[in-house]
Image (cartoon, rainbow, N blue to C red; front, side):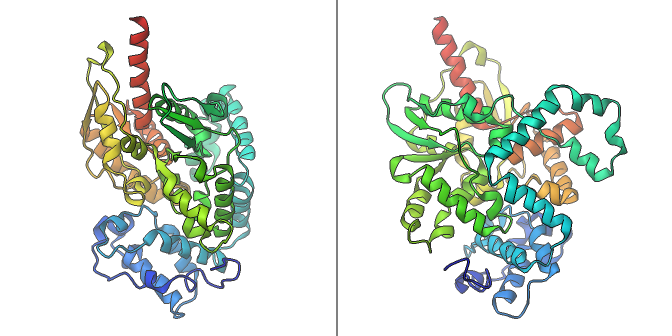
Length: 444
């Protein structure tokens, strides 16, 4: 089906997907927005009823419909709970595209923000990196600290003060500065893999990308990581910009022809969930259809791939004799979208000196949800407080999570509460264990 030719994203969808919901209600207890409000339309079942009404021609896309699709976190917990296997991820993306196409939420300010962020900033990573360098300069020169100290930001409206407090710390180096275009395997090469460095992951957590490459090469993988990459398109697909998501999918396939690699590695839960469904975007494209299907099979989350190939356990060292407690918060799109649940835990259990303590409601959304913490700050804050309460109850000194949005959300929340927590990607803990074992071997 051609996106350009269709008149409705929901009417153009295979109707069996829309009608699959049995209205059994098993999704209701898993939905954070329904749990908070107990309002039917704030549940997956209620939202699907709205989508079906549009598909049936009984309802036009209205402001209420568009705002309801925006209120959904897109955490996909309902997909894990659903006995009928409803593909809510596809329905939500179509519904948000329907809302954007209708223009019912349009305003001059909203058009400006979306044009700046989606059409200009994220569509070209060189622009995003330029913005990142400017922000890094602002932070490293001490200007941000000085302005905060003298209270300039207290003059801003409350919401702008909250946004300023959430300003992320930009990494001193981006991924291209840390990772060669090709990193040879340590020892005999078993696999050749591509490494996706991402966009926000690159700006905020390029050290995680470096650690991922280090772990891969220690497990006999040659890693290809071109310095100039593209956004995976998840921010576009999740926010109703279907055409741009399709364009970026084509660019990814051109940059990383899937037939040339044993696997295409992602270390970001939200990005990975999108990257594994290029067929959904490009199945009507005769040039890219075959490659998109192969691409979907080749994309692997880092935890998934390491367990699949037989990860080499780190060697215990004398520095690992002091046990530290770690707990694991599940990225929604990693657990509910990609169904990767046990692999991160298994990797954490392999690391000497770590004791894994389970987190209550580990797969309940932390409120990050892409741009949700920016667009729906009150609900995001409620979910963050709930998550931090559970984290504190574990007594853990380390929180592991595998998505840049979750990392940033938890870091900001812990800082506001004054919690002494190390919040880190599981692969960084594994890389540190490998390095410690290597350093010991070198001294011996």
